[in-house]
Amino acid sequence: MKTLSYIVLLLFFIGCAKEVKPWEKETLAKSTMEDAGGNALSKQYEEHIYFSKEASKGGGGVAGGGCGCN
Amino acid sequence: MKNIIWTFLLGSQLFAYDVGDTISPAMVEHLGLGGEKVYVIDFFASWCGSCQKEVPLIAKANVTLNHNEVEIIGIDVDKKPENAEAFQKALQAEGALNFRVVNDPQNLVIAEFNPVGMPTLYYVKAQKVVKIITGAVDAIDAQIHSDLKKMR
Amino acid sequence: MQLRLSWCAATLLVATAMQAEDYVSVQVLQYNENDNRVSVTAPSIMINKDFGTDYTLNASFVADAVSGASPTYYDASSGASAYARNKNVNVSDIKYDNITFSEKRIAGGALFTSRFANRDELRVGANGSSEDDFDSGSGSLEYMHWLDSSKNSAITLGGSYQYNEITARCVDRVGCDASSGASEVKTSTAINVQLGVSHNINPQSYVDIAAFYIADDGYLTDSYLNVVRNNDGITADVVGEKRPDTRSAYGGILKYVNAITDRTTLHLSYRYYWDDWSIRSHTVDSDLYYELGSDWTFKLGLRNYRQSAADFYNSSDNFFSNELYASSDYRLSDFSAWTYKSNVDYKVTKEFSMNLSANYYDQTTGLKATYFMTGFRYNF
Picture 1 (cartoon, rainbow over the protein chains, first blue to last red):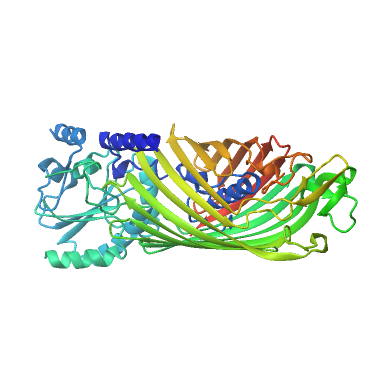
Picture 2 (cartoon, rainbow over the protein chains, first blue to last red):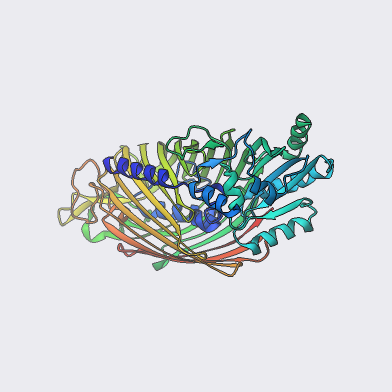
């Protein structure tokens, strides 16, 4: 938890140091910057495979999206 | 002189045009805002999803405007000229771009206005900012008409 | 002119560009394990549709046909069933081998996103899935709040609740004859809470950090799997495995994405997970995207996963006696795994793109799997 708060604090200062302007977001808007390169279905498959074969889960958000993974 | 002002503004990045502010003489000259009209300045880029939706709607609004009273000016902030060109060509092919566009590949214009989001519309009258609309707005065409009616 | 403060002092939120598109995407998965264990064919479809600038609906649907086998202990002398459980079985008749099964699953989900004037987002989701012996339904709620006026930082809090109905082969009920196929309906629930922060570091990179908590409650045992108890060297009992009725899991995930060059994008992530079954895991994932021209995108990925065993796990047929909880499921063992990933995406037209993905999964338990995904996406 301590580590987490340090990281959040660090991010805060990075943010204060220099913000990304709205017109500088061309790269950030690219699909290759998104999770799974923007291919949400393939991400669901992979999460389902790992869920079925490994004992850990979580971290992928709460919304699910058709995976039906319990 | 222009460059000095822009460099200063770009360097500080702390200033932004807000409602009531007067546009710098250099920018008035650069964008051609010296007339008696209301200027509607729209910042957009090819990579901005909601700009792609908004530009055609602005073009639609432009069809029925009185061009003696109002001029719409697009500012394309694409850094790569080839992207700006391709985007504008595609819009023109669909009849979705019927106003003057100033390319701003070095982002000097938008840095001076310094909006907090994209797309952004600035209404400028007598070199002063009258209104700012930031972000995607449904039916921006109707919004422009009603805004201009109030400014007359 | 007005002085604009950066996000550490900003309180005013104004709308900005958002990335939303209308699209239909279709993918088909073909998954095959070594030794003809499990084979899965699964087609899926996803539709994303904006309603104006304030609402987005995302719906997806997947069907899969699973056939194959999973390994467990069984009584080979019993002709009744491949899952045969019996007490006092001759040790020489106890086998550990693949038990065949086949099942069909359908699952679907919808996520509705609503944006407020300040562009904060509320996302409401529902998911359901159904297979022969497992039905599940869940609902989720998530709120994303922009922390700065330039939309470079956001905090997201989400929660979900899931309800499962499991048709379990009777395992621990007195007088229940598993070999005759008798079963009973069991239930379980899962609560998942996640808190995350994302931040654009510069025009080329961003980080996501999130912490999550998952609480499982109810029937968490796999009713197809057996363990061997009371092995005295001559006879032993082959009985169903048994897991605790609750599981509390915690974890954190850190993601970093950087466009190293105009054409190259690197994704890195690390997840740490721990639960009260004594399972700890580390997941390191990396993907490298390379854009060739304006039409081709190649991806190479490498993922490493390792976990420690559950405290009630043992693989041996000569370990368990009267412990309350016992499982020999290899998925609860101490193991590590590598995934080697590749994908190629080709933009046929401005609106239409196709992809093909080939991947290899290699677990130290002996499990190896090859899976392919292919499909298309159409932006409308």
